[in-house]
Length: 383
Image (cartoon, rainbow, N blue to C red; front, side, top):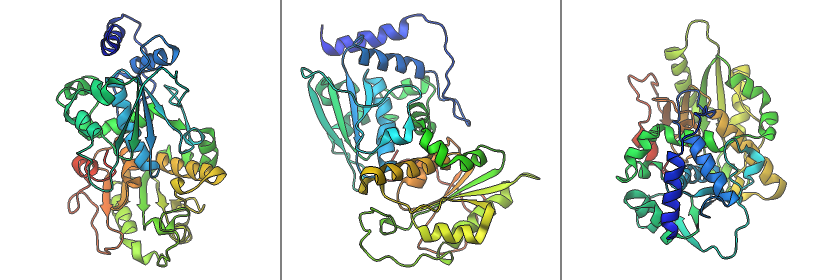
């Protein structure tokens, strides 16, 4: 039988076979992700066990954590719609940071007779519209990725969820599955990843607070890679970081508290920054109001060995925690804060500020609007 027909036949039979309704355990606290999870877990398990055609989607993220997460999240849906088992090549120590609540996404050895196609989805700032993989995800048939090879390996740093939701062949199907563009990223991360024991131990107090009833404001202040250990510009001298430079971030957070705090409700700020100076100064200035780790921030792609493992645990833990905030004040540069906030599946919660353009702000939704979905999705690394 034609290999593509085998995959289509298997998926059709899987969807039509009667079985008891199973509860969906991966429900985000702000919304339901649909009912596709158990079906894809079965397909994934069948591929790995040899009960289904050996079709794999192997993802190798490049650059840092947020870029890689954007790629992985989109490729989950590409794999699902094309009948493939998603696997992650651990060029970063993914297993140190994340448990596998629904499918085991670790890359496994493959039979030498399987053929492989290697594709790229990489950006230096613009959407890679000329890439073959991009064109197929945007308007083609996902079964044609890699000309139907047994193993399709994707290298990149680009999210494709927004692109996939515009594909006329799959748009309606994604909506029928219970997904929408603005929640699909958070649903993918919730399905694939749960914080590892190492993260739960390292962020024990922060998790207790961020899962409580306080009004939680996430603040992410990114100054640039020169402030990160292992960053690509670490060897360049960077300017001294001061709170005065970024005071508009804290002004915005205070305005959100004034606007949205309920009577008697406690308030907590969660601070993320690539500057250890900003972290330390914020803690000394605002005290118990702010949750912040005083570990030296690092760029996980620029580290190795145990340093990389520890950096991955710190970065993944903060990314996960930031998604638990009710509102998010983020820097306009980089994708870490944007993707971490998007994990929450919130609506109208993300306010973006320019670090190096000090100005008065009015973060009250009347004078200053939060980011729209299009503004979030169409900014590198995209979603």
